[in-house]
Image (cartoon, rainbow, N blue to C red):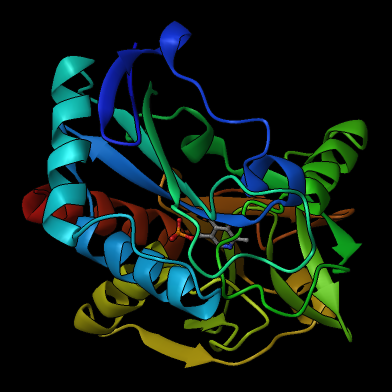
Amino acid sequence: RTVYVNGEYLPETEATVSIFDRGFLMADGVYEVTTVLDGKLIDFDGHAKRLSRSLNELEMKEPCTQDELLEIHRKLVEANNVTEGLVYLQVTRGAADRDFAYPKDAEPTLVLFTQEKVLAQSPVAKTGISVISIPDIRWGRRDIKTVQLLYPSMGKMAAKAAGADDAWMVEDGSVTEGTSNNAYIVKDGVIITRNLSNDILHGITRAAVLRFAQEAQMQVEERPFTIEEAKAADEAFVTSATTFVMPVVKIDDAAIGTGEVGPIASRLREIYIEESRKAAL
Ligand code: PMP
């Protein structure tokens, strides 16, 4: 594979980053994952804007302009012949002597690579996934897309150990989000998902799906919902850049609705994929 590191396109085996990089030493960095369908980028603009916001919140420099970022994404997709998959992008504060206080003028490290993956025709979307609930013990700025992903990784491992696919995190009785996705339930035809705040990542897929839902005259309510409400819901699903809309059919030991993929989740998945393909760059 060809990867990108600080201005250079290199074979992955030749790409290097300093051992003093603060991303490596302190998880001092942010990332984005942009999906590729038909060799084109889904919602590039949304991901680029969220990246700028994350960098700004952490007083990090923009490594380059949005146009330059788009060009790097496109070059990597082309160099690696990616028709379906993703582009991973990471910006860290850069290399400096190890210190908790961060340098204000460090040169950021910018790394991008691609990964091929079957996404639109994922067989899992037909049967849905099961989730377990776990306490949300992450820090209080989950709106910043940092590379501190240890707790979500542990959540995924706990899910696998319990024979499930993923975990929903619960704080003060309410679901915040999934380990790597936003969480939704459907009750009496109303789509319910937690409102935006510092408690959750502002999903790019979430924004698109809510817009498509409203355009399709579906009812949407943005508010916290409890884990008990979720277990008694008619449908549940998650959204993320690489899973689009993924139905959830079981939460802990409770089957959701009929225990099969529900009509609203499957319709939203279809609409999302169709509209995203049309708008891809
Ligand atoms: N929440 C969390 C915690 C995530 O890690 C992700 C995906 N990175 C999402 C939500 C979904 O965000 P997006 O739709 O932008 O992929």
